[in-house]
Length: 266
Image (tube, rainbow, N blue to C red; front, top):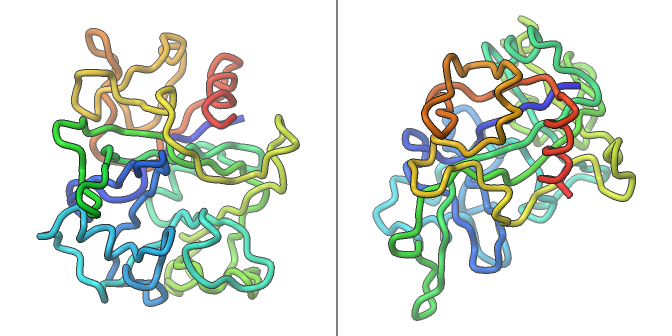
């Protein structure tokens, strides 16, 4: 089995502000802007009665995001953000060099993606959602997907999935450089939990070492026993320095790492 730490959502280049840790603990990952997707805009997707655009502008009034900007809603994990086709389920697409990495690492059925991103705590002041002053910038795990199926041909895409951004990109499908990962019905190690979902904030889901910049992680020492892709020579004095470039950090699921992943999800 493989565990994949998968970096997603706004970053310093795409979006240029942290995703919010909502006052109720919701980890609301903000999808990156896209000029290649024409299905969802920031004003068309919703959380708790607010559009994502309203949330973004409340947090950062001078945000580069505009209401009619299209966004790349992937991984698509939250059912309630938009109207759904009958039969909808969560999905995650990957393509080009990142997909090649996953294939080279033989990521397959049963493997687990743990999605993380750049987050910051928020609060409501005078009716407005704001980032908390002096709150740290953190890498936090906010969702998961255990692979139940991999779609590698465009002709195999079911009707309910056709609003997913990776169903387009015709050229990459023709070249075999696109795929969509669908979840198992239930977690293989916890049958009462679905094979994919979003997570609320919890201290053990924070990767960032306290007092350090967000890319410096406080991983347990047993991670030293495995190779993690995209992270050459990552171990520094007292922390793991995660790669600043790259999306998919793949590792073998040793018994200790699998137990760690289970605890993160459950």
